[in-house]
Length: 355
Image (tube, rainbow, N blue to C red; front, side, top):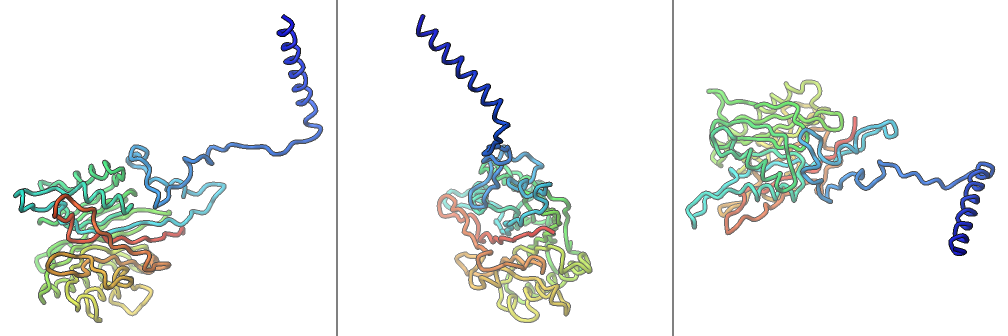
């Protein structure tokens, strides 16, 4: 009983001391307050591009990519930090290949998706991909494969090229507008239209144009490529009249620039695409991979190697571009000897500053 009484006395004295302490604290002031703010927790830290993405279930359909929310302005932080956007173009050869050993067609969507996930691509312009309209169903199959990889790209735009090789845009950002570009008529020599998609990032539209020009190295095919390049230049000048130098525009795809005369010379296919046919240098586009890695082929097979694929950017996107901004990426290897694609994934890191 004595022990319990002593303990009770001690607790009583401690309680009285605490009350007295609170009473006299205002007389002396206080310092060293520690505030735990919800927005300072680890979950609020922006995701690193090299550190991986949030789990797929953490990014609901219709929401911006993980990490974008941290870029939104607020009363405490009115400015939007620059965003590094990873934009790619890839001819995926229908996401399939014929296996001579097994005598069957092998689907390669999982390997395509794994390559995209490893490269952490934000927006990708595809060529030789099959729409879901009674064709190969690549759009749905690849979307599922990407989700399985934890790298969902829930926004898609598709143009049916009325042949075997359609075009598509996959994006982690919402696609605000989409459509076809340069639909060939009876008098146009090119076989396929292009695709257009618009997304809005850092409060500014980004205009994306994807193409798959006429293949082969014969003179007629090269003439066809040059004709479509000129038509594209004219279309861009009209669609972005007066703001061609300030609009954020990316032109990308498989331009099948198989010949040296497609790549160099004042009337080359690539020169036509870059110069835009006028005398104003502020309107010129920059062909990123040919500018910084002219000797690195984007197409590789047993026959030859060539720079067929390109990413071109308008004047407003040129600033800060360098060799380190452009990557030609080998695809994740499929089973056996079948390559995932005969084209490399071409990727550009583009810094978008706020406006």
